Length: 270
Ligand SMILES: NC(=O)c1ccc[n+]([C@@H]2O[C@H](COP(=O)([O-])OP(=O)(O)OC[C@H]3O[C@@H](n4cnc5c(N)ncnc54)[C@H](O)[C@@H]3O)[C@@H](O)[C@H]2O)c1
Image (cartoon, rainbow, N blue to C red; front, side, top):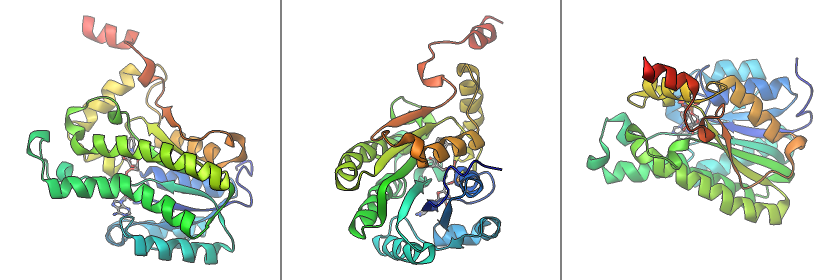
């Protein structure tokens, strides 16, 4: 049972593919806190994933949209306003995909068409979502829009290749659009930089288990789970964070500010 933190609030949740998805866990949490929303994913993911199961558990309507298509986004936002019966208070962008990573391309052998696709799907889509919301005047005052990032935006990770640039761009869009949306409508825009999490997108990165274990050892609290992330997103959608905007918020058990941990020392000394 939740605490009605989101009672009366309406929104859109992008990116629930299966029960491991951060968006899936967030949908359940938001529902539990009294929020109402539509669910969306790319048409192809709808066929492969299980979004309809989630939709019935949350009593939510599913509206397919490729997040790179302005037309799809326009339809999604318009229909969501209709289905939910009013303007929106929250939006979650939980979308990431790199064809170069999928095809195992090294950073010195990038396919540039795919590189542009990575940026379009994983970062520019966030701008398209924000711009669609603005143009349709779809947000209520004091609304909250969140996207998910990773620390590879700021530090090098060999196998994260072009997704590192996508995340840097995503964080930058949150700052630039956050400034604009605050002035227009008092809407806040943030990214959460999440620990490695065992999901389809996470596990697609080669060496993921090593990043996961390394981060686990280098985080005094351990890695933040998908459920922890869903809780944090819920708080960011709530009225308890009304003055937080244009931030990249670290949600990583202390990883980003640790030099070395005792656990790592013990491991290396052995
Ligand atoms: N898993 C991790 O370790 C980790 C860590 C930090 C940040 N993140 C970020 O969290 C977010 C969610 O990923 P996840 O880990 O839950 O994995 P996931 O694979 O469950 O979710 C990624 C989603 O992106 C959707 N997507 C891909 N192309 C799309 C398109 N064109 N239009 C609309 N949707 C599209 C997929 O269908 C999928 O639902 C991503 O931005 C990811 O980069 C993940």
